[in-house]
Length: 339
Ligand code: TRP
Image (cartoon, rainbow, N blue to C red; front, side):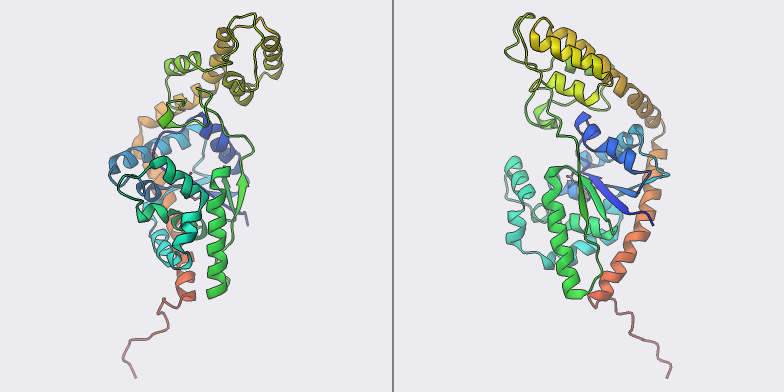
């Protein structure tokens, strides 16, 4: 039996280069070896987008297009939609009894997200408790492994606590998951500041046009002290070189460009033109595939709905075991009146 992998994304935006090297490429590799599920986490997206259902709905489509255009293969990976899987909602309700409000308030991911979002009317209870819903996602599928970035580690930890509590109280039913930490460091934005993020406007999307990519690359931040071509420049904290390292294939050429840049005598524009070539080569086949899929949207939803049916079958089995263990399955009661 292959081990089960679950990953997921909130449908709140199109996927970008950071997602590509941080997780998508990895998923394409993992799908050969594991029984992989990818969850479009629309319920989780609504926890801080309750007033914006159309945004979530639109981005479900974008996620499906992004997955399929980078090479997620529906014959190997099951893509499914969270809100269409009732077992997840039911499990969430049961697990809420196993977690304290204080523990949720201490969750580092939730804490930092609350800070970022500055909810004006107070913190929605659904947002505070989304780690419980994520524990339901992970355990519903019986996932052994969850590939994710460092920021998701507290989510997996909280899931493991819920699993242990559940299993102690009700018997060994749930599987404790392990995180597979992404090997690539988080990709910084084109502005050289922290991570790529839509709100900072420093992203290159997988679905950007060739012109948009070129414009973004030519506008990238470099070494601020590299003023004249002849000045020696820094390649380490320089996003242009960081991207070349991440996406370039010609190591020799990249190393020689780095040496030249560090010595002085290589202009930013030249390096950026090369990076543009590299990124165009990476993204063109993805964009082409995406354009084809966009012409046949019913086929991408068909894939997601079929995946969801498979997910429903698997997760409802978990739910049945959970209910039996919690003594709320009522299956042994016989109401037929034959004597
Ligand atoms: N919290 C994840 C994120 O923001 C998305 C997610 C939802 C997820 N459910 C999941 C990830 C289950 C892994 C497993 O990226």
